[in-house]
Image 1 (tube, rainbow, N blue to C red):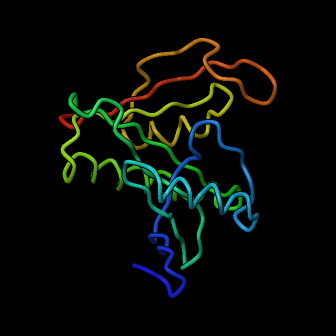
Image 2 (cartoon, rainbow, N blue to C red):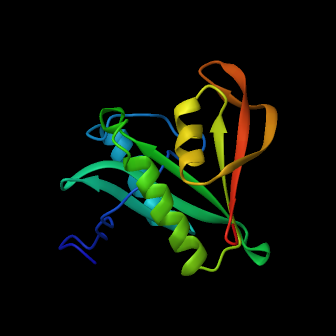
Image 3 (cartoon, helix red, strand yellow):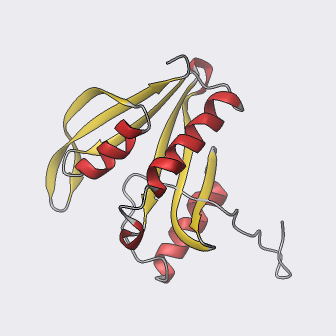
Length: 155
């Protein structure tokens, strides 16, 4: 859908921040720019997560190894929306879409070891931890482990 100024409108749905992106409040112009860039320029499916008509996060997936049927999931929710089940519901809906509509066989997601709440979101949605990549990421000034979670279409 286009606006009068010729720019595309953002879809009505969302994800966890793309790798390496900074966390900002959604009314921060840098956050909006990051969101727009990720949604409009990504190769996969990117949606806004909304609650009661308000934006509360982003969610989406992109192909990792398309010929192998593997996609990577990512999501981000505004801290004010945490603890309401929005992330788990969004993860369940988006992975169902990836399996049924895009016919992916596997969806993976990376979680910093320092973010157990995000790991719990994935576990509640049926993901299982398949690997720990030691000191894989640089977060808040230090190297941290990245836990890789996976969900298979046939499980």
